[in-house]
Every structure is written in C-alpha cells, then in structure tokens.
Length: 125
Picture 1: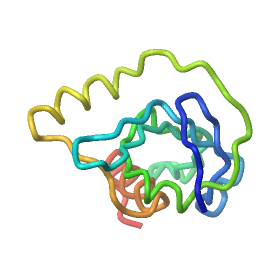
Picture 2 (picture 1 turned 30 degrees about the horizontal axis):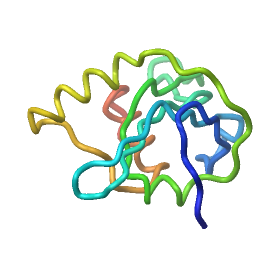
Picture 3 (picture 1 turned 45 degrees about the vertical axis):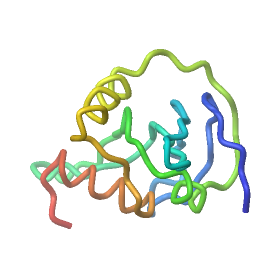
Picture 4 (picture 1 turned 180 degrees about the horizontal axis):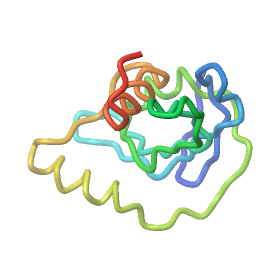
C-alpha cells in the first residue's frame, strides 16, 4: 500500500484496543541523506490508566519521530487536514538529532505508543 504523507494530514490508524477514536497528525516529513523518510507525528485521543486511582485518563503524544515505512503499515485513511503550528518537540528533536543523540522509531506504531506511555507513566503492563 502506498500513501502520500504530507504535513497537516490527520489519519485514522490501527489503534490499540480502546483507542479507536484517537487520530494521528502528520507534524512534518523529512527525507534524510540515506533516502529514508522520517515522519514526525502527534497522536491525540489516547488512553492511559492512572496507577494510583485506576482511572482511565485522556492522553496524547505531542511529538514522536517514526520511520516512514513503519508508519505506513499502521495508516488506514486520511480523515481531515489541519494547519500545523511550530512544534517545540520537533525543534528540540532536530537539535538533538544533529548532535547524534536523538533517533527515530523503527518499530510498529502501537509499540511506539506503549513504550512512550511506559516511559512517561512508569508502567510495566
């Protein structure tokens, strides 16, 4: 399946269970010297369980970079477009990438979300 990925697209994607209403937004795309496509995304409408109260809370990822080929495997369809403002996370990532200390996810999107969730909320499930 081939998709034309562009900044500002809002996508329906293969979500984790219980997050079917979440969406993925393309923050930016860039092709690097090796020819690889890096796609910077934000994901809205995620759910996280509060370990203290057991309550399910709304959550989002404001920026994460992922390999374009891996991302394409999770995309379903474009649902809308939006104007993208400057993303501080992307700017920070670019500086760190230039220094050689930031990378790009090259795993399944659901795994990216779970690993990000675990790193932020210190969950082990």
